[in-house]
Amino acid sequence: MAKLVSKTYGDALFELALSKDVMKDIWDEVTAVGQIWKDNADLESLMEHPRIDIEEKVQLIKNIFEGRVSDIMTGFLVTVLEKGRASELENIFDYFTDRAREYYNIGVAYVTSAVELNDSQKKQIEKRLIEVTKYVEFVMNYSVEPKLIGGMIIRIGDRVMDNSIRNKLNTLSRTLTGIQLN
Figure 1 (cartoon, rainbow, N blue to C red):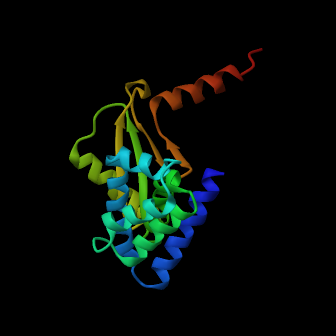
Figure 2: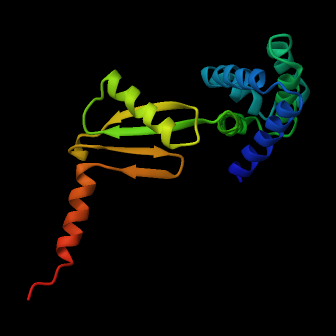
């Protein structure tokens, strides 16, 4: 249900930003408002409090954001509140961000290596990913997992490229296990 809510509202905001030709501005506002929302847990709690009237919540949101963000964003926040979906705002913004990245052909890559990579290696990996994918830019996330022994695992969306020594050893082990000796 939560995914459906974030998709529905995220798609609505995305389509509105696209139709008004303000995608970049709305994306910037989604990032800023999302950070404010994350940094102020009390604000989210207040917006979900059952004893506070919806009119008071709407007025509070207007007082905080009106004049600081676009009318589109303020109206969107008010709509989310009025529909009782304040608890889903973070997921909605995450969904919108994913769609905006796809729109601008910006990929998100997760690279896990056995050892820490230096800046030169990171640049080479990003350059190679740009060459072999449809993306023109990447948001790169690096982590170290010594259990890989060597090599790396790269995940982009639901695609995984496992070029680790651990994976190669596991594959070799399965192959050798399947060999019948006479």
